[in-house]
Image (cartoon, rainbow, N blue to C red):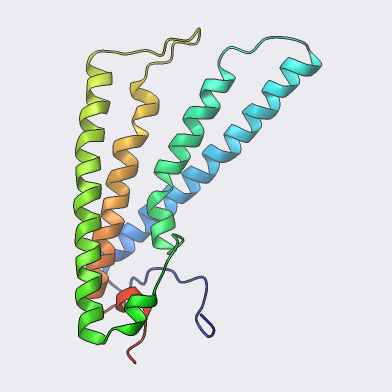
Amino acid sequence: MAGQSMARIAQTGNNPFLRFVAALSTLAGWCSAAMIVAAVAITCQMIFIRFVLNGSTVWQTEAVVYLAIGATLIGLPYVQRLRGHVNVDLIPIALGRKARFTLAMFTLSMSIMMVAIMLWYSYEFWHLTWERNWRSDTVWGVRLWIPYLALPVGFALFLLQLIADMVAIVLKIEKPFGLEDA
């Protein structure tokens, strides 16, 4: 909307919990960016090996896939902190202050519940791969618990950021949906 800043970052105030979660989310964002850079570098190396040296690659494609997926999952809390997800605010704009607060609490509660379920099942899946020492069916044979660790870590950090968002609204550090009262 006109007049609103497009780069709205989650507010932390002087709250130590919110500042800690913001720091974790920012660190996750940097790790995610590093994974993307590594995936691009590995892709360039793979292209050089295949087309310049006419050689074969063993691990590069699999590594790039795991890095891209890991970057997506580890980057979730950072995108949430920056409010980078697609946002349709027609309903919150039309609501009054109390209804907007109620809607924010409802949507955050549902999001927290869904991400908590995803965290539970992703941890269970990761633990199974670790316990049974599963390996990929490729020549590289990577131990799958290593790339699959991005699942519970990403969802745990995302859950923490969602909880921090709810705390910020409850403590009135941030407005529901970032909208000022009409």
